[in-house]
Length: 402
Image (cartoon, rainbow, N blue to C red; front, side):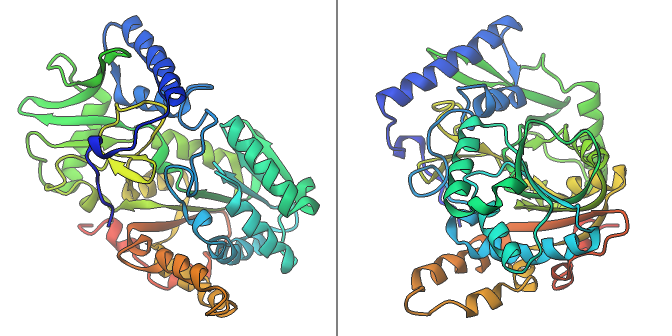
């Protein structure tokens, strides 16, 4: 269970960090002024996270691990990457010797290093391990880690600035990627759906700008009306939530990028009927700063992570619309057990590796990451699903009213 802290409970940034945040705030304020006084929340989130040299993921501050703002599964335990090597190897064996692994947003590089070490030990390496990384700082961190841990595998690793233009055969890995992509925020009113926009400036601070003059665009309004139809009932007035309008186009671009292969999406999220539950009236947006979760996305832009949970039904529908098949959907706990994490646990010493064992339990415990995190496997072409998908098949939960 995540504890949500009030803003006044957050540790203060250093003067240098505050100066950095003000610089980003001035950039955001300039764009707000240039377009007439407000921008969509999705654009605010894009700038706060990815503005070149200033956004949270583009600047040089630590993000992952004890010294950062949050800990992802690969930083928590190497058994995460070692276990995922199994499903990847199953797909790679079907795809042949020229197959790739493409990781989106490799973070510290820990997942790639653990995965490649494990695949190398079983002689199941991909021809290429590609990393699509927007952050120059994170790319440099990954390069240092690989040079120290797996220098012999560096010739197989390449960094990309964009998706491959020539279709590849391979496996795509996306661990905690979707939650950090920009979302629009919308609010239901008696007159229909409004898009929440962002106003303010670097001095007075930023704020929600839910003006009656900012109704959702026709396309967004139609999408939200279709959502309510799919849910079987209208959402209540005052209901605030998030919307990922870019998802269909992104799935289409990934479909064009692969001639054949599989994709593994791992993130915290819910099927549609639970994501948009009538009682979830304030959405799922969360901010992470120094291992504290809170609800103020406008506090210290550039110094905190902004995330939203994943609507896995929307992900499945966007994928299917472009030609991907949904091969599996389950909890992280079930997928890792199905992929053989118990084998890796059995190799540890209960005394010498006690701390590692305790950290690994967080991946599996329902009260920790085991249930909140879900895994979706998608396939294109004649590829069979990894065996881990069959352990607790929850695809029916994506469309419970179908």
